[in-house]
Image 1 (cartoon, rainbow, N blue to C red):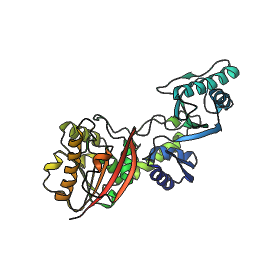
Image 2: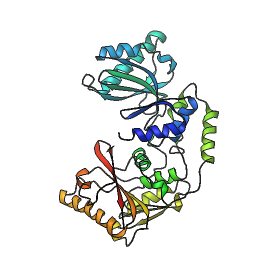
Image 3: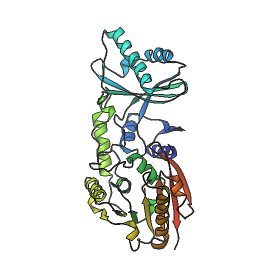
Image 4: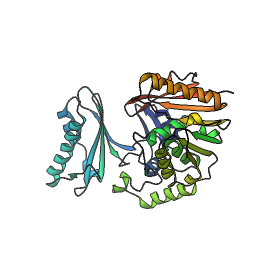
Length: 364
């Protein structure tokens, strides 16, 4: 939520047509090549779904009946496995697992009546994954072309507790002006998600270049030659970095994790990552881009977290001016104690937490 406009811009650049922004989704038209490119290139998308049908259903029986009318044989073979993913916001359909169960029954009964037996369910690695999205009484059923969530980029070999989602990190960065700067600094880098996503954007590396599996690879119309050509063109489009990237963290474990994750990427070993306390840095590079996702930290007492955020604001004013500072946090009350007036605010979600990205133009 909050990244719909960012995603629509990404889709526009890829060549998507008839783009419409919906709640937590962007709808667009395109061909099979664009479907493959969408999975490879979109940084702020979690899944790429291909619409099968939509209808109204006022109860579970109507859902089952209309789901059974779908020509499932177009999307699934008898010897294949399938799974159902659900997104439900409805006063009528209150249990997402029961929704999945009813659609599963519709598929199974359709096959059993026509073929005498049915495909098996496999929730871990299915050949076909269907998405059922219900808002009130509106039902949309789609085929999931991504398979596993697109935040699983393939580079994160080490992470800390509650790491920032790669999709969210990329969406945050696409809301900023970091590409205009020559110096990028994340002084609370954690396992390095922000700095890694920024490096990939800067060198024009597709976010899912390292992934080996996508849902569309199990489809009967999968074009292997087309996919290999798209990957080859993407590889040839990677460029040298134009920004100096620096990450620091007070935790040795965090620094180790960041270095490990970056080492897998092109130019990842060129990124400077050190163990440092942000509050003990003498002077920041002038006119730099500074971004951080500080602890929210629910475990700290309220006065302690407020003081911590105030110290960040003071440090930026005293030792980092002039700079562009972007702070992302799920502790909005603490953000309000920052001591600086934000030039821009973007409302986002981090998991189930309300969060904000704030931009501060720090003058000398």
